[in-house]
Amino acid sequence: MDEKRLQIYFDIINQLLITASSEQAEPKNLDADPEYVDAGLVETMMQVAQGFSEEGNQDTADFLTTVATQLGDALGLPITNSSVKNQADLLIQALLATEETEGNPEVVYPLLHNNIELLDDKFAEVLRNWVVDAISQSSSEQAEDIAATIGIFSSLMHEFPLGKRVNNLEIAIAGYETISSVFTSANYPEQWAATQYNLGNAYGDRINGKKAENVEKAIDCYQSALQVHTRETYPYEWAMIHNNLGSAYSNRVESDKTENLNKAIHHYETALQVHTKQAYPDEWKMTQTNLAAAYLEKGNKS
Image (cartoon, rainbow, N blue to C red):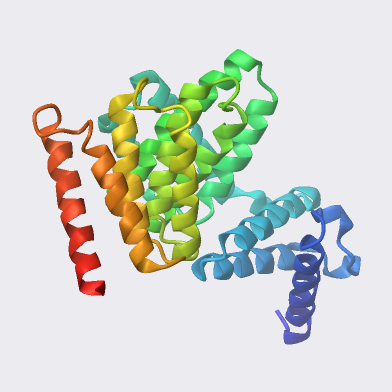
């Protein structure tokens, strides 16, 4: 590929990103010479998207990947594609295994392990697109079943010990976020709260993106879950959420550090109201360790 053509591709992509900042751009709206809307442009888009992903700018990477995939479809290119098709096939196989075994990792994990090269930085977007399409074409009962399976699969991906942790977490986050269109707080409060809790955990562990933003998202998710998981209705979950809120505030970047540590201590002590040594010894030990660390860090700040 000559340098002039490559530069034109970059100019098209740059203009596309500028347009996307104000409105959603579609391949058919590309303001470019048809001569340059070809397989080379699609390939360059995918490469640029990968670069954004590696830099932690996943939203831009996902946008470019989606546009490149749609453009490839419009042009009838095979890039849309053996890789994406293989990933979609793996996703369907993994979801079937998840549904049939109720999320048995001894069945699902070997399948993922055997196809681990497909769990790359693009798999999360494949999952998002598949879920949106599947839910839009399903009845409310079918959509509920799909969302439940996606939720279990997302939890499996969060804990998957192989492959790249950064990609596994993005896949888990994509799954939790997509099922929020089905498990709303109004219609499915219990499932919604559980999803918010899991999403908070995933954002707390997230590697991509800025730490400060991830922690804030985790806190927001936990606070949302507490709207349903109250001490009276779900005491164990309520206490676990407070423990995790303590960890989130301990890691918080925004606001005053001492203030954040005070909030962390408050949440840890709140969790211990339910997670007592007698009732939940393992959880009690975990929270006591977290609480001691928060007090120690606060003392060092004094």
